Image (tube, rainbow, N blue to C red; front, side, top):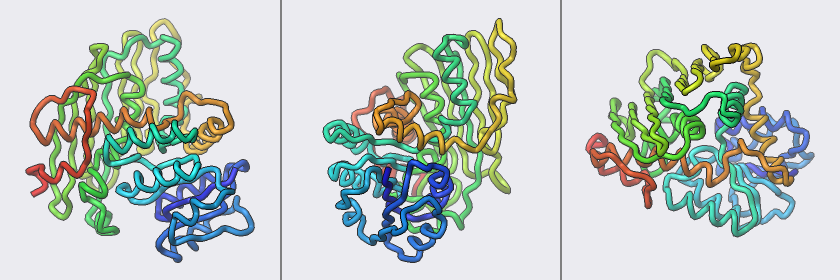
Length: 352
């Protein structure tokens, strides 16, 4: 399968490490405004065609009939525009999170993908950690019962230098907030495991004034089945990242997973069963490889229940948008939302 990559920044370097492990995927084209960045990404790739075409205008790439799948790894504010054009060109699309910064754009892209008969995937690779796949398996089997209470935590550091690397970073309109960029993986996991939401109540706080967006976010999630979830995220951990944690307290068991890469299984107990062997849930570093393979399986007609398509991605985005609106208006927000875009947060008092 032939892959074209739009956006050649740091995150693309990580994708290159994954792509090189996939014999069934070949990069044939790159697009970025910077020739230097395109050449750098080219140097990172091993599993490629002899000739990689380079385009400063991504529209030129999309006219290439040989490309089957497009990876979009640009700044968040351009995801929707590029994904729309890629789908209209008949390409399957894999987008770095977040899919868009607007609920309407996400819904429109999902409908467009259906209309065009193309897949629209989102990079929620933490779903493919061995521990997360195991959680999904035992939930499906009913071994844990209902999750009564779930907590997702992210404690990281994002310095001034990070935000100064690009003018769009830390802006509501073009970047979105810390929660939608760094915290979205935990929101996705919690809602993936716990189901449909009824309401969200949130608070956010900005600590550093060199940007518009929040440094701290807390959300209380009420699910339709009566369960409760909590999201706690911050980007002010000193001196560096502390990592992530996921805690699920269910009717028949408890799961606690922590770590810099959410790779330390502290507890995985199901009542009436021996404790799930931790050795079998070790972090193998292949979660993004599994994500790509699941996407390729879908394109080949072998549907994967774990992959995050446009419809699946709406749940995490809607949760975050509801949390932002709750913080903006100081109210509990009922779901579903009709629409929201992160640009609305420029009215938030904390940004001024």
